[in-house]
Image (cartoon, rainbow, N blue to C red; front, side, top):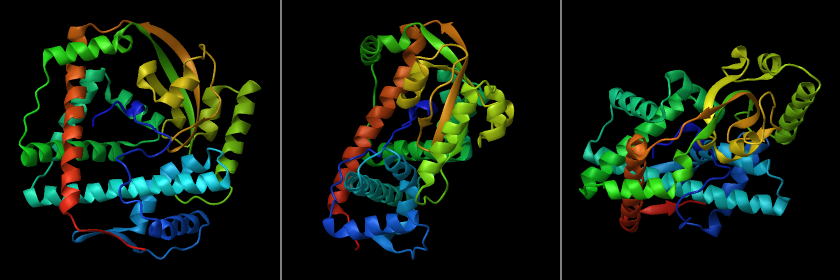
Length: 340
């Protein structure tokens, strides 16, 4: 689903129910995670077979790493943490299985997506949200996502849409009444709002999590926060400490409406006044501190102005709903094995 880049963040992985939650797989899931976090060498292995394709432990670990980091930094008790990690890894594995099923159908149907199609989709997103190219890149940066990864997400959505149209052969029609109903139900999103000119300091999670990593990163960010409290300019601190590409620009991110920010960033920013900075904010890809350089009042959007944006949102929702229902049917006839 196409989403504003600063709206996509989530603290833990969510998806379809973990219908393959086999307790016999607990050892593979948790042992693999503990070995990775301890920095020990892990011998790769097959964790699932989907028809003629496989999913490896390294694939699962790579996909789950950002969410694992969030969970480990959450402050759960050791028992709660292990349970949450297990459940969320099972959901991630479930998502990877669905991706394999979709990939198999895409290959069978000969469906392809060209770079030009991805470019056009991104241009459409920019037009709907009134983003410049720099706005988009800075918005992605705010959530720790880069453009190559974003393009992959866009490609995946285009392939999914084509697959729905090809396999299900169901035309999706969004009516003006549906658009108006959505607008009326979400009128606050289209009312006049404040727009925040933001800067950030960003420390990304390392590729391999080790014991003490989270605590060390948080301690470092708290030290930076202390320097800011003592009067060090945010721009100077960003240039010195931030590990994001915008560091040399003093951490400049661009202008954002509050509804464009992911929930945890929104919570941290919305109470700030001009010239104030946030506490340390935990995000999918690392820790951040945000600074409000300026606050502007921006006009709302009329129904006519918001129609294209709502049409796209409702269309994508319909595609994803049909896709999920279709994938569940595929599952029933697929040969799926979870390997201990």
